[in-house]
Image 1: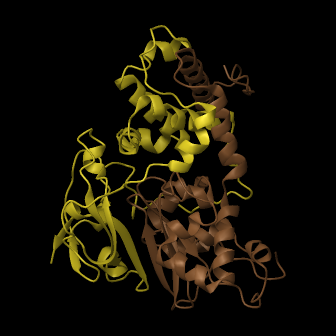
Image 2: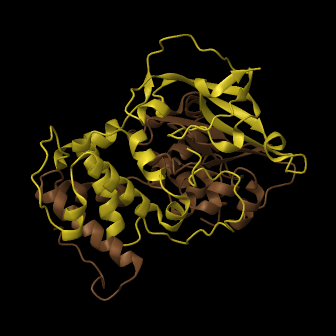
Image 3: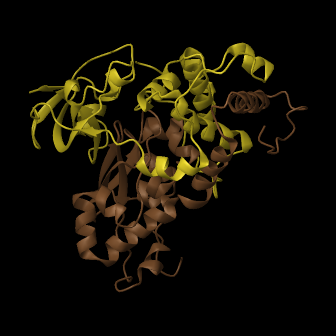
Length: 208
Length: 219
């Protein structure tokens, strides 16, 4: 067994407790049978909790803001451009970057499951995988944006990208005014996870 | 399959509720279920399309009442039980009761980084020229396969415009059934919001889906 803490499973008869016991049973069985190595499980968890996350995507966006030639490469073929920064692999094998402009705002969803560009954004948050988001992003994106406290001008066109195959999408948000000439490091601090999904906007200078 | 997972445009699920400062996992069991799912793909040798079908292929009330990682767990159990890696009585007992099935490889800690870094690219060499080009008008077929497909119900029968051509990719509809990769041309097809959602809907929206060539008819 993993030696990890499990809370209250002996006292809590909720569905979740059943689930906890089932996962624990499975890990025991799979380890006993030699199919999985608990040290590999620990490493998988550590990778996505500590190493891979939206900080990666923020660096990609910051470079695109700071470097016009990188921006052009990213928008033309995002997978190799993102690989230049060292991000690649599982659930990011084929990435497309879509650019927000004054006229057009992009929103990414996976209505069928939870497709999300792991190497640049990490694992998706619960809301991204939830029925409310998956159902409404495609027919009521303005309502969804309101749920996030985002109001776009009524004339802004909204483009929704439903990741139905193995192409993963990242939004290149608009660079906030007054940040020309900033370092990539400083720019990256303005880039939020949600701004790269399209359910948020970058932070404004001074609020970061 | 026309299952509960195909959620685009379904009404009544309520508002999106983002969780401030959300942790990557909610509880230890989610961590372990996630890692077990990734790790078992090595000895299990199923593909990602089989995994997706194992998750979505369940009654709507079951799919909708489970949390995300509960669905992953149920999918993993199904894949393993179907292939004889574990048996239901073992899960009940909480320990191995039957001999292990011989496996070629397992995921060792040394191979975690390279396995994740390599991922599972789906692009393949083209075996035929692409039928459509950027700007072509196409109609999404009105198909209702009982098995795995990536053509969401809300675009079926609707007219759209090809806007990206992604090369040939593994075809999930056959790959999920163990019937081979059968690579097909993959396109991004853009639909006008009003064509999908009716005259009274928001005129400023368009929705793009990634659609394999067999999903599309020329117009």
